[in-house]
Length: 271
DNA sequence: AATCTTTCCTGCCGGC
DNA sequence: TGCCGGCAGGAAAGAT
Image (cartoon, rainbow, N blue to C red):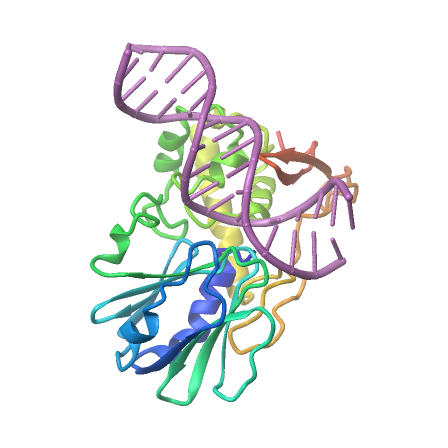
């Protein structure tokens, strides 16, 4: 799925096309995403102007005078800006048509994404209200990570992927950040020292910043907002490298399953 | 045909 | 007993 860097890249890709523009229509071809797309969106949005766009966790927020459109790309979603005469393909479920003659199209083969409408303060929406801090904000620091893990006996990797602790750290970047911090993914979260909290916050921010700089990685489903292929392999230290030599010490990278997800680590470099 | 992918939700558990 | 936080497991759809 698109991780935070891909969502951030998508935001930067669509924002110039939507900011300040008027919606001429909405087309819903298949409303059954994770939750149903509201059936009255066309009526709600026609003639209204996009006032702003932002990202919170992996949610994209498109704000109008009278409410906010909340989008999530799920595991396989992508947004593209296209001409309005572009024929839709099989998994193109949602179009936001603009007075400029362009449209923003949501493609989501696995339909775990979401298109929702919220009136009032968008950050109070139930999906957003209880999220932890943004990983790249100053709110996310060693003190917070240390505090948040004190009562948690789960593995540190699972804690990093818990959106109540910090948002936007998905499977790839959790694995990579733990490698760079020299911390094994199985470490009980409440055993994380203050010193290691410092290191881990730094490596999380490092891997996310690098990925955003590279234009968002890398998952095979990701497509840039202009429609170009987004799949180019990033340089991973551990993710997907089971059995291959650790790039730091040569020890074979190990695989394990945590919370029904794949973890990868170097048993020599990570303790 | 089992596996992989993310996140929310349900239900269980132990502690108080 | 009831509430709470913490946690495991399940579910959604499609590609491979």
